[in-house]
Image (tube, rainbow, N blue to C red; front, top):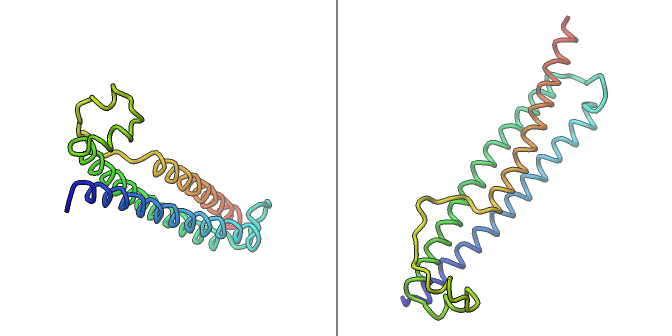
Amino acid sequence: MNNISLWQYFQEDAARIKEKMWTIASWLYTLLGAIIGFLAKEHSILSYTWKDPSVVMLISSTGIGITLYGSYMLRSYGFHIQSSWDRANYIRDMYLKEVKEIWFLGDKEKIDKEYQPPKETVLPKEAKNLITILWAFGIVFFLIFIGGLISNLIINN
């Protein structure tokens, strides 16, 4: 396998995984939004009196669990994307000078810069943003859980 094929493989791998990450995030957001909608419609969480706060707490706990697992998944995908980009950049910078010139649009300073491997793998910005949105859902579910707990205490006293 030549260097250009290897570079293309890692670039395409990162693109494939990035597309899957966006698909998974879309499904997670849809599912979590549907759960909140269900709680609002069927259990009246937008009013002062909630129907069956114990069920609301159980369902919101499920939302928190989905948020935690989804964060783990998106984080794993993000690290995979970044490691593929790191490998592709290494091949481009060390063995494909022509591609490097095109990549940096002829910017002589960037082209001549010596390759520096990353000290540690960091999450790409897209993954960080998707995880932040997911955590916002998690906060909403946590607040719903606390509201159910308080509502349960009021009903039982």
